[in-house]
Amino acid sequence: SKFKTICFFCGNSTGKNKSYQDAAINLGKELVLKNIDLVYGGGSIGLMGLISQTLFNGGKNIIGVIPKALVGREITGITVGEIKPVIDMHQRKVEMGSYADSFIALPGGYGTLEEFFEVISWAQLGIHNKSIGLLNVDGYYNSLLSFINKVLEEVFINLDSRQIIICSSNAKKLIKKLE
Image (cartoon, rainbow, N blue to C red):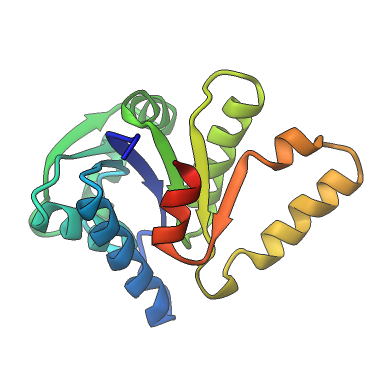
């Protein structure tokens, strides 16, 4: 792979749809097959926990970056890989971005969207030129993609900015597109 390390954003829940869990595990397996390491939000629960455990089981290097305030809420049980506590969410994103060659968002909530849009903004501003993917499991992000197309239509972003987001519903195809 052209990537050494991928950063992912996703929920600290597994969601109500088992396909989200399957997609997280499949993404983890695909990263192992492509010999790609992981940097992520550091939690051991939800989709975060599933992906990190899959990569850990596959022998990959894992760096979890977590704000000290979230340690008790997002780390339960045994952690995998190296856990790097940081001061706050901003430092978490900067730290994760410094390790990552690419970014992928899976289903998640406000935190996932906030992290995802920040790296998109950084790309739009030329702060980095790393690829950014959206794993659109079972159409989870269809409404968001429609909204982004509306933003483009209303000329609040240009076509180059719209094309920052690389989307697929399949982990293997998404990584190939990102490469």
